[in-house]
Amino acid sequence: MNRRKFIAAVGTFAVATPFVGAISSCASETKVFQGHFFPELGYSYDALEPYIDAMTMEIHYSRHHKAYFDNFLKAAEGTDMLTTPMPEIFSRMSSYPESVRNNGGGYYNHSLFWEIMTPEKNEISPAFKSAIEQDLGSFDEFKKLFGSAARSQFGSGWAWLSVDSNGKLFVSSTPNQDNPLMDVAEKKGTPVLGLDVWEHAYYLKYQNLRGDYVDNFWNLVNWNAVEERFKKTRV
Image (cartoon, rainbow, N blue to C red; front, side, top):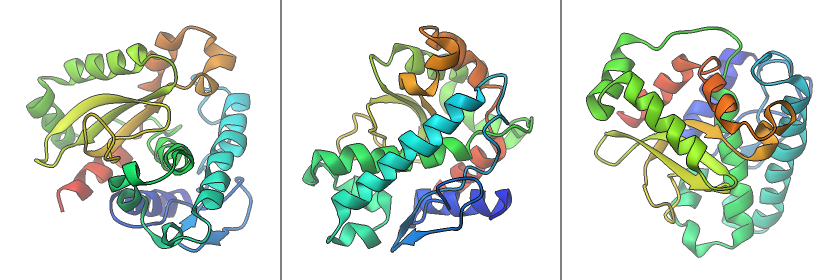
């Protein structure tokens, strides 16, 4: 699967379908488990250096993310979750066991995370920047809000830029592997940008300097993919 097809597959999944991506390593064949499959990374482990190192990427993707995927399948075995889109599962998350919440969230969140990063420098479009400015005051203010959400998340979790039910963008954070699609989330919406602030995402390179990791994240954002996700919420 090439990178363009990967982005299309993951972006479509995130809003409306059960599909997430492709495979367990950059060179594996796609293995679909009914409605769910493990996403292809789309770039080499060292592609995001110097901001994220190759060892972190390999461990994060091939061990942590793969474990979430495998454990979600185990938790979903024998149920209709195997053919249910993740957003639909998340909308009823309070009725499912913790194993589904933790591993389903980890499966989905990381699939989004790989998609919205790129080794190729790209700029945010004027149209999407304007949408952010309209809802969050200014682009700089958005970055401050997002950075604060990432830095201040106590312990493990995620920072998010999402679209609420009224079509407005908002910034939030969630603990562990929760996300704004879950009915247990304090602020609910469809995520278009997410940053993993679990220590396994940055500790090999940054140790306790989470703020440096957060600041460097802006060098990696795939604004094209983020905007495509945003556009899908408007359809």
